[in-house]
Image (cartoon, rainbow, N blue to C red):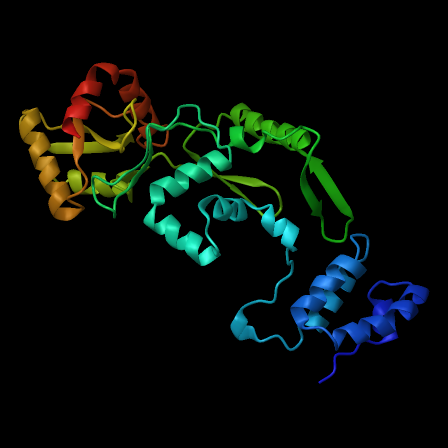
Length: 342
């Protein structure tokens, strides 16, 4: 069935009458002479302009792809030209490796994971506060990779390396006109948000969710979630198992990263019942056995601290961040011990 637009449609959706009259015939001719993808590529580059109403863009897009085969997925909104494709990191890497297709690059990246990510990190100019000593450690098996050993970074440092006057964002609010933000302007906004979080006494480890109305909601602490042997687990899950061990009144589980890098280490703080459990080595064996039997044998206790009480908030929640900070402060003399346990 022929694709056809009327003069009334072009006027209703945003063109002045003179423009609509001049464009009607060539538009209808192109609609029925070019394949859909090629037609949209031409329209979006040669006919439509940023100042045209979005409704006009939408009308032409939906008309062009009216008979699109949905088995191919969603129809493309933007199609890069050859020059843009050649300027991409993927194209540059394919040329560097003398690969002829994306499929070949994908296969190479799977077979050479460490080399691929080393190349991409350098190509993307990711900035590190502490450089990684090894891209990936597979000594625990491919199911539990340890990435970027020893690395420390704040990804914000890598986001603002362009000239401050370069355009970072081109956007448009619904019903509004196009606007731009330079890298300098975006960095100022980022600093404003970060500083406001500090003023509100938020700390690393707090979850903050951005709502659709541009408000933010604090969702509590996230520092009770850890990654052990490549597996996400919450401190509550570990503590629930450990608190069933005979002689234990309560426990707190935290994860710390050794100074020289490597996998996160599981540290347990335990409050014991003195007359029932006093031997630290026996308690550690009992706790490890409980984890192995009821949780995951890959979770190894790197250190055990027996304490009389656990720090708590006014609402009686255990302050895992305080325990982590306390452990880091005392970590230097224990660092050798932790590494021997790995």
